[in-house]
Structure formats: structure tokens, C-alpha cells
Image (cartoon, rainbow, N blue to C red):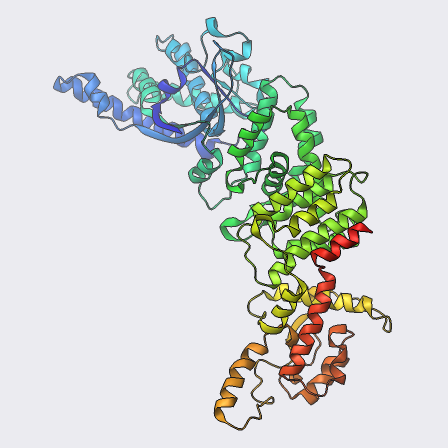
Length: 615
């Protein structure tokens, strides 16, 4: 990154074009918001410069020394990205950040030039050089202009920059030019009618300064933009990438940009895409997550969501793909992403259930694989194989969650699985679902797929309440109950919204009042109490209840509580409570083993899925 402070004269007299990406936002600076304040600043600097020069003449000092003593006015920073240009042609810079500022400065210069031309000032050619490139080095008419605005405004820009006098009516550009010209007429005349033209022009050209950040190949506009604009407003990397894509298309003379935008990009303008997922500093908009997922899938390399702009730029430079193809692919991935994460997305009931669970687990690292699977045609990946592939991913992730396994290298693990799936997809003789199950079974990134005995050991011996979130425990219990409903032919299955149910400790957390330990010695009671404090939070002691469950019985003795639990709802995980005479350590352990066996059916082990794929 090359960051330096330059005067407007240093920036704009270079033989260079500053290009605003095609679909950047509208020009939004206004008289009340920025124009008046900007010219007030110019007048203040010109007054200081004029005063310094008058004092220098009175004291016999050189004017150059007086000019150096005047404090310049800093206008902030702009971020520019190098664009490819033909050999011998004008240097090109894309305005990544600062288009409002640079556009307004061009309009200010144009307004000042109007006044200089009216007064037939010798300074007019100097100011014009900050607006136009020399005619002997341009090959197309639009190359004349130092700044070339977004596509929507390009018909207007030559009118705004022409020497013809325009009125303030109409376009905001024309209003700004007229306003600055009117202010300049007053400023160059001075209060007492003296000629302050040189002070105004010199202040504008030499004492108005910008910090110019020129990006190099390894710089990240996304991070720089975020720092400059404050972290209170999360940056959308997707907007930067959008500008990059359409600017590249324009420079390559790829036609029908508006049509490409309408067909492929406009769906991402929907408010649904603006919702943020994740928490705290890790929260990102859905568009950024999609972009990261697409880049991971197509490049077979894990994308860093915090550096998306630079990574997409590097991918586009190396892949040499046409913009319409990239946009069409992004659009297809967007449709697939909505199928995965939208309530109204397509997919079988089992797939939608798995997607919802992944969403509750906030497991974004699996997103590239889930989205890529939805882009595979049904002819290549049947509905059954699709379900089994996603079930394998869900089982691997949920079993690891239950057993408290490490999640730090999940991105690398899912990328290994994605590569295996892509390799299988390229071979008509191979099964994509088989490849996914096999890759997970082989412990990608060294992360194993827990066995049935691992689930049972966790349910029996480890407290889960307080370790897992209540939402995740509710998901586990709900899935187990649903499976028990299906597997019990003697009862009519009941339909529950498990997300609305509440977790209940069968043996209450405050067990000491009605669940006393009947042991002979204090030492035995103390040890048993410590064990019970852990026991009450284990899976075998947890169930679900509806909101109308009688909380008055929650802490009462088992003889009272068991009937309330068994009769208040048709939950299968509570159905046997009425038949259970006692509720103690042994009963809790037995129920934990039962729940673990059912959980192993909901989230099958690798061997089971491998066998099912053979059928």
C-alpha cells in the first residue's frame, strides 16, 4: 500500500483517469450537507494565504516563505486501485472509496474555472489541467476527463464539464457547479473589491490536500475501507466486489451491463440479503457469506471472509473468466443459498430439517459445501443421495457437538470434503454422496466421526446442561422425541413445535428439599451430593415440557411430579415416566443409554450410512 498526502494539483495534473465503478451509489453530497462547508473551508484558507502574503510584502519576506507558513486544509482520504491499461495509454485508477469527495472537488474546480473564464484570467488553463487530460495523449473522447463517473451519469458528465454556461436547474452536478461558481465570483472579488483570484486558486490547488491510498496487489481494500469509515458500520465486501466485476466488464467492453445487472445481480438487492448472521465482530451480511461460500467452492481454497475483496480480485486475475459467466454463477449460488437458509427454500423435508439444524448450530464453515451440493443437477445427484450426503454432514457435526469435540479446524475439514465431492462429481462413475461419507469417515483435518459408544458415554457420564446452549439441548431432545414418535406404532404421532418447548430437569436442580439422600454417614452423603449435582445436568435427567406445564410441581417429590410429566403432553421422551416407580441415579443412567441409542438412529454412524448407500 502506498499512502501519501498530495495537493489537488499534484493529484490531478498527472496524465491519469479516475474511474468510478459502474454501479456505485448515487452522488449524494448536497449544499447543506457538504458544498457550503467545503467552500467555507476554501475561503478560510484563501484568507489566511492572502493575509500571509500581505504581511510578507510589508516585512520584505519572500512570498514563497509566506506560503509555506499557511496551514493546509486536509480533505480526508481516497482509496484507489490500479486498473489494467494499454501500454502507452493513460494510467487508470478505480475509486474504491472517495467518489463523493473527488466528484465534488471536480465540480468545485469547474465552478472556479467558470469564473476565471468570465474574467479572462491567465489562471484558467492551469485549473483546466486538473479537469482534463491533454488532447494529444487521448485516443477516445471520454479519456479527456480526469474523472469518469459511474455509467448512469456518463451522458451528463461532458455537459457538466463543458465551457457552456449552465443553470442550476436539473441534475445535482449542475446545481453544484452553479453554486460553486456563484461562491467563487464573490470570493475572488474580496470584501473591498480587491482581486483575490490568485489566493483562491492557489489555496485550492496547493493547500487543499488529500491522503491518497494507492492499493498494490497484496493490499486489501476491504480492511482499509473499514478502518477509514469506522467500525461502527460493517463493511459490505460484496459491494466492493460488485463494483470490481462491473468495472472489469466495462473495461473489457463486455456489452449489456445493465441487462447483466438486472438478470444476475439485482436479486441481491433484496432486503433478505442484508440480514446479518453471526455475533459481534464476526457478524456478516448474507451476501458476504454467500460470496465467501462461492469463492471457496469454485477455487477449492478456504476464503477468508474478512479479506474477501482482495481474494476475489486475485481469483479473477488468475482465472481469467468472463464477467457474464461469473455473474451467472454467483446468481446460481445465490439461489442455492436461499434454498438452504430461507424458510421458503426448496428441498425435501429431511433436507430442510438438516438445514435448520445447521443454522441453529451457526456452523457457517459448512455453507460452501451445502450450497455447492444444491448447484449439482438432479441427474448427477439424486434426491436420495443428496439427503444422505447432507445427513452425513449433519451426523458428523452433531455427534462432535454432543461429545464436545474441537471445532477450530472445521473450515479446513469441510474444504477437504468439498474437494473429494468435486472430484467425484467430475467422474461419472463415482458417487458424490459416497465420496462425502468416505471423506468424513477418514477424519478430515484429523477430526474424527464419533461412534455410537462415544454418544452413550457422553449421555451417561457428562453433564450437558450448562455446557451446551439450551437451544442445542432442545434441538437434541426434540429430534430424539420425533424419532421415538415415528418408531412407536402403538401411538398416533403428535406434532410439536419443539422450538417452543422448555427444558425441564426431571430430578430438579433444587433436589435437596424432596429428593434427600438416604445414606448412613455424612461422608457418604457429601460424596453422593457432589455426584448428584453433576447427575441432574446429564441428558438422562432432561426432558421437554410445554408452557402450560404445572411449574408448582417442578421441585416436588417424584411421586407427584411423574404423573404431571407423563400426562401433560404426548411427548414420547416422557411417556414412560408414569411407569417408573423411582427416579434416582440408576434410572437416570438407564434413560441416558436409551436416549443415546435413539440419537444414534437420528444421526447415524459412518458405517450405517456407508451400508445404506450400498443399497
